[in-house]
Image 1 (cartoon, rainbow, N blue to C red):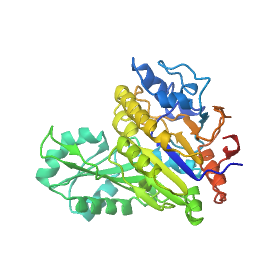
Image 2: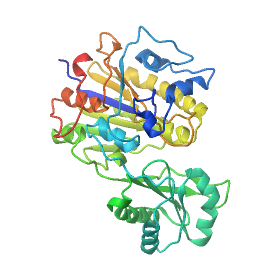
Image 3: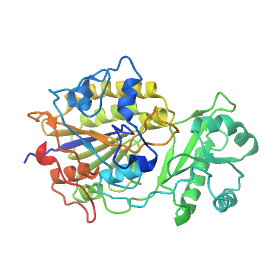
Image 4: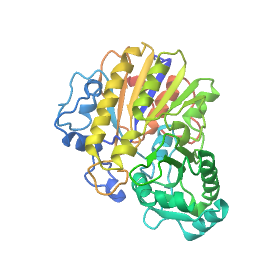
Length: 395
């Protein structure tokens, strides 16, 4: 069996390709992120994804199925109980999450948590509701600055987010408040997946801009993952984007923070020019954060076009013993009601310059297929209790 020296795993954050059998129980009926993005456009230039076989996994208005696809492709179903970023990524690396993270979307955070956060930070909490990050700044940013208060809000995800003005509050103060919130939300009844620092600049409505100094304070993975197995076997485990935050740094040997999805691809391209042995694990979050949650299918499509152009720069750099994997962690149909993620199947695209032919693979009932494939390639054992069956022999 061929062994790849380098594997590049790129997660197009939220690129779902249709309902799961249980999607209705999550409130998601008729969802299909990729197909509906395609239907929102007249022109859609994603030739590299087309060549890899993406149009064989979802009906694209601009592209027919590709019988000559050079990649191997299939659909993956999420086995875990959830549709959030951490659950999806953790499952990719073998963890099966049966108890979903707590969300506070409907009523905000409980008074007891807010009171303790006010006591520990010395600031009055304002907001405490589910909101768009840009909208809540327009609503409360001036008040936070003028009164020395603290904007706390959530979303449809299991997150507690805190806004802080870089010029008046300072980054280190904001990060300190988030560390306090992370400590408090380790309590079981307040347990959220991530506490997120949301720094911004500007002094009045219409001028507020969120900066790239966001920082996530995530829970550590619930067990050992394939990343840990690779690191313990002395392989390189390089992260790009918010992978470090999702895994709280566990199992990584090198990390790169991205300012955007395009920047993340530029970082990946530079890493591909280097020699290493192991995994480069990339998350491209703008699809989800900028377009999916904001229900903007046109912007989502534009982002896919930008990604495809960068993919066209990455592919020629890949060597005979490299493997490229492209997938997603959940859906976020920008044409669906609300602002929540959508529970969907995700694509699995695989390509290497050494691949003799493309074609469809058997559909898989877990994202853990990805981690299992990577583990088998590098001849490391899957950690105890992890899930997934390798597709390496089919590649």
